[in-house]
Length: 161
Image (cartoon, rainbow, N blue to C red):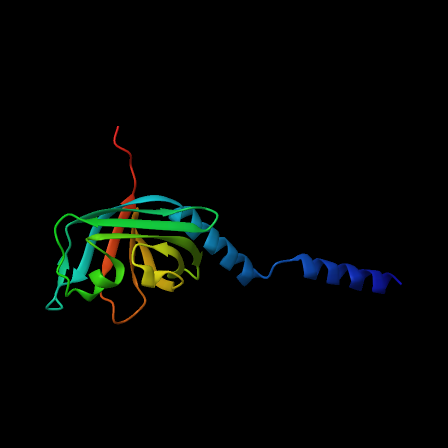
């Protein structure tokens, strides 16, 4: 009887103990969320021009992640864009990009943005996988699509005082 009780107790403990790797994954996502959540100001945006050469775009923007899994992004180009730029046409209209939806942290390197609303209506309903990394206090984001060659650097938003 004691052996049966001990076996039952051991099984109960085993069922309530999180495996080491699952704990690390959950903790890793929490650490990422703690760094992502908040408002980010656009520091720089690199994208290909009509000739395919990367250049620094003259724009400003704001990216917001909420703890409950919502996300929005807005980018305004200060100067007119070349309409032959496929990235600009894909994400912007009239020199402005705006979209919102939900996001999921996939792993330590990617998140997926589920677009619920966007100025460019063809984006609505899409799930856009993004590669990210932190560099100091900056967040660097780019597309996981090998055909898209843009890169955005965001820095924590600091209100003007």
